[in-house]
Structures are given as C-alpha cells and as structure tokens.
Amino acid sequence: MNKKTLIWIVVIIALLAITILQLRKNKEVTLKRIYHYDKNVPISIQVDTLTSQKLTYKSSYTGTFLPERETKISASVPGKIVSVLVKEGDHIQKGQPLIQLDKSSLELQLKQAEVNIKGLKDDVKRYSVLNKADAIQGVKLEKATLGLQAAELQKAILQDKINKTTIRAPYDGIITMKFREKGEYAAPGIPLFQLVDISTLKFTIHVSENEVILFQKGKTYLVSPNVFPGDILKGKVSMVSAESNKMSHDFPVQFTMKNTPDLEVKAGMFGNVYIERGENEESIVIEASSIVGSNIHPQVYLVKNGKARLHDITISSRFENKTVVSKGLKDGDIIVTTGFINLFDGANVLIKK
Image (cartoon, rainbow, N blue to C red; front, side):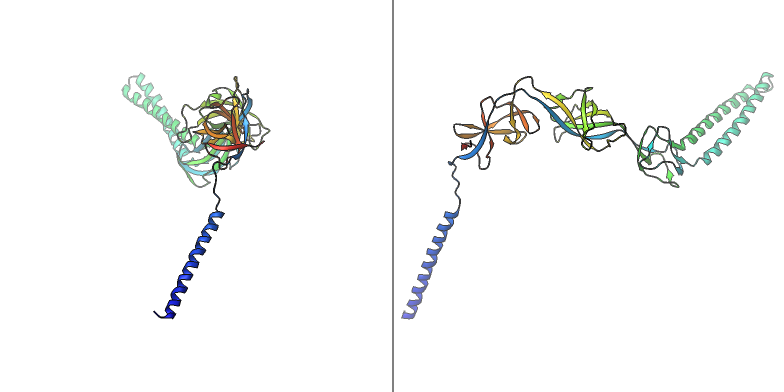
C-alpha cells in the first residue's frame, strides 16, 4: 500500500467519524426539543361544589307547523277544460267553482233522455187506459213502466255528470298549486289544484322518552312561531305517539290550534311549544358543559383527594344549558367545569381559585 492510498483511507475514516458525531448531536438536540408530557404534573381546573335545589323553569321544544287539511283536487268525470276560474294564491270558499269542463255532449244526451222519458210516459198513460179495458195484456204496461223508470234513472245519472263538470272547492282554503290550464284534458285521478287549509294548524315536536310524559292528550300548551314571536297560539295535544322513531328514539307529539285571524302562520314554518316545569323534590343541577361522554353514557369528572375521577351519571331532563341529574351525584360533590384539555381518569388536578 502506497502512501497516497493510506492518506485517502484516513480521510474517509475521519469524515465518517465526523458525520456520526454530528448525527448524534442532532438527535440530542431534537430529543430536547420534544415535549414530554408528565402525567404526574397537576392539571389546572375549575370546579363546582354541588347543592340540591328545587326547580321551576320553562322548557321549549321546536317543531313544524303543518296544515290541518291539504288536498289535491281532481275531476270526477273526464272532459276538456273550457275555463279555469281561480289562480295560485287565491283564497276560496267551500263550494266555489274552480274549473269548468266541456259538458255539451252530456247536455245532448240529457235532452235525448228527456225525449225518451216523454214517449215512455205517454206509453204508460195509454197502456194504463187500455189495460183497464182489458184491451191489452198487462205485461205491456209493466214493460213500459220499467222502461220509464230506467230512462228516469239514466237522466239522473247524466244530470249528476253534468253537475260534476263544474269542479268546486271541497272546503275553504288557499290554492297553492295549479297543474292544468284551459284546453287541457282532465281525467279522474289527475290533479288539477292543490288546496291547503291553514285556518287550523297541526304542530309536531319530537321528545325523548323522559319528556313524553310531560304532554297529556287534550291538554293545552302555548305555541309561538319563530318568525312571529309575539303571536302566542293555544295548541291542544291531539296525539302522543305510542311508538318512538326507530332511528332517533324520539316520540312525536302533535298539537292542533287555530291560526291567527289573518293567517300569518304558514305551513312549514318553525315554532316552539313552551311548558312550565317544576320538581317536587330537590334535585342536583349541573352545567351541560360539565358532561363528557355521550347521551347514552353521560359522565362527569368527580374531584376526590386531588385527583379527577370519571363518574357515571343518569340524566332526567335538560333545560336551557342546564342538566338535571337523577342519579350519580349528591350534595357536596365537586365536579370539574373547565380544564378538560389533557384531563384523564386519575389525573392529578390543581383547582383554580
């Protein structure tokens, strides 16, 4: 090995040694920069010492207004539309004409039926005289009488069809949609108008199983539309569902009420029903923000001997930002209200004054 090669080997070894030393130094600097959480360091929190109290408060439940009656009006007899007598947005009265169908063909059939009836009446009169004189067989008079009855029945059927060519409103309401125009063909089952009656409204809310017992069928509650908070309607409970919604496990409760005189409240608007609530016995009430976990498994952090311990509770009701606890807490218990970041079961805590 010559001298030049030896020098290169020494240089390479030196470079490797310098690189290794630099990498070790960088690792030490990086480790020093990393934050190492010490679970033994107390976490700063704020707490509340619980005391039971009697409650009187107002709860509200949001729901939707719907019309008492909503109908798609169609023709009972087929025919061409010769005139449309109302338009969308019109307030109409029960029995008011809405559409007139062509009835010319039916009127001609009615005139033909009236001619037949006149002839059959003459036959019955003539055969009656002849039958009394025993000049004809009684069967001819019987056939003429039956023919007259059939013709009169046919006339009544035609008159009913003619009457039905004028399509009338089945009740007072507002035309919200029009589906056909003059010149189009109307047939049974094909909608012509949508008629909505909002003089009486239905209002539906959904409540939990703990709250459904607060609503009694036939009892009256105060309901206010969101867009007209000054309007207070009196809603009577018309239905408390016997079965919950399978997805949300909430129970529908429906109210029926009169609309304002000028029909301010529209179908589809939101509103709130209010109920005064009170507890006969004293209860533990906590801030809803103090609860961790889920609605199915609610918990709080209970402070004991300088440590925070997760503790199961049972909730009986909620109002505003408060929660009524029926099981799991008692007078004198201390629970965490703020400082949940990094908090865990068994953590050391420091209570802020």
